[in-house]
Amino acid sequence: MLIYIGLALIAGFALSNQGPINSSLKYRINSALWSAVTSQTVGVLLLAIFTLSMSLGLFMPLSFVMTHPWWIWIGCFIGPIYMTFNIYLFQKLGSVQAVILPILGQVIMGVLIDSFGWFDQAKLPISGIRMIGILVSVLGILIVVVLPNHQKNATKTASTHPAKILLFWRILGIFTGILIATQQAVNSHLGMLVGSSVKAGFLSFFLGLLLIFCVCLAIERKFPKKSSFRQVKPWNFLGGLCGAVFVVAVIIAVPKIGTGLNILLTLVGQMIGSLLIQQFGWWKSPKEKVNREQILGVVVMIFGIICIKFM
Image (tube, rainbow, N blue to C red; front, side, top):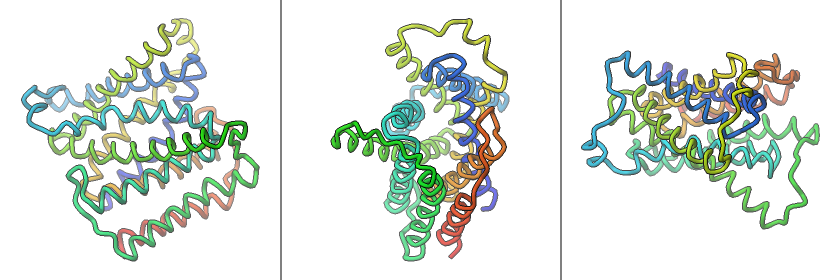
């Protein structure tokens, strides 16, 4: 059990590092969408190498596609959609709400998936202590994200937008969290069906790459200039590795610990990774000392997870 808890934490830690790495890549090639395509391509290549090294084929026969439910493939397309939505959420809602609302969506969807056994996941009834643990974990998330930014007056909600437009973007923020929770559950089921977490990760990344590549061509209508890539550092390509680690680790962990607990653990991993990046300025990020409220929030989240799993 501890191995799978550790994998969920590693998944979250990897995801927290993917953001600043891809942000630097975006700055260097001057395109958020093409930076996502580049990152996704690296992930596809790495997962293809691992899959082939295990003597596994890269793709599934048509008979597999025809004999299994259509929804096992939706997780493959959620990653690029999630990344694209997040670009606009940060612009429209500011950094705080763009983080909180997707997290809220993840927690809500994780609880629903576990409670009703959606996507062929094992049912985990909500007990009183488990509900308390979920609420405590959400409180920890709010402490980590809201308090430090509130003290610095960093909540930059675009007040010039009409209330109805802001409501739309806030609902979209929660929806993006629902998407990422769905992806974790669906991809884990895909991993069980194909018999390999690495192969399922490859399929997820490959189909996602096809989607985001088409989106880039439709929106950008041109390829980035070759000169743009001359500024790219070798570590700028590690975002694809982080994404691959996240997908594979989640596929392995979810069947063992459940979608809801996996989501909370990956969130703890993200928080810890984000605080380390903030403290030490990894990936050329601005350095900022971690404060007591942020540490307290992580401790509260961990206590909530203990309530969910061990009480």
